[in-house]
Length: 184
Image (cartoon, rainbow, N blue to C red; front, side):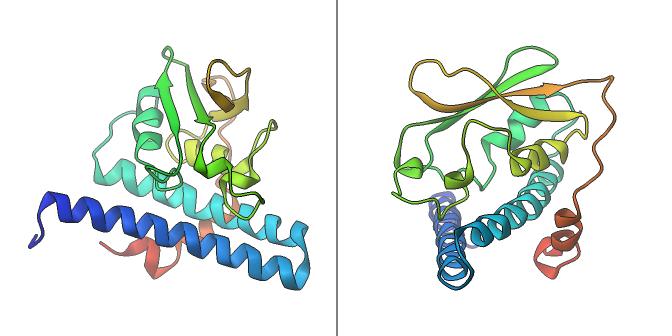
């Protein structure tokens, strides 16, 4: 409350950059000791847990009502997994049951290696993206889709009211039970 809006914006961005660097250093360290596959597996689990908890916390903090595509899009627009100025991405609601999430070609995809959360993404579905959208609606999924324009990767965010709700992944419980997830 003692900082200006501009100062808070800068601090939040710095926090996101530091988080990105911590993820990167974890992956590099694990890869040097146990190999790339282990580093990617651990980073995926980390992203699933942290991503879902962050999505839940954002939804609550911003009083985002509902669990439809509009609510999911509102959470993803501010999600810390997509560092502003580093990740060029977009998210939009297409209709009541479908949205679209995409990453454009940019710094986040140009690290030259796969030691970032974004480096884990490809043309297949990814459990971390599903965990993030399922924190808003357990019937939501991110399905890879065709790219248009400048998009390098794209997913349809689909909410299927007839689908069985996905149970929260174990990775979410590991993060949700920490002091980091409970601070206010």
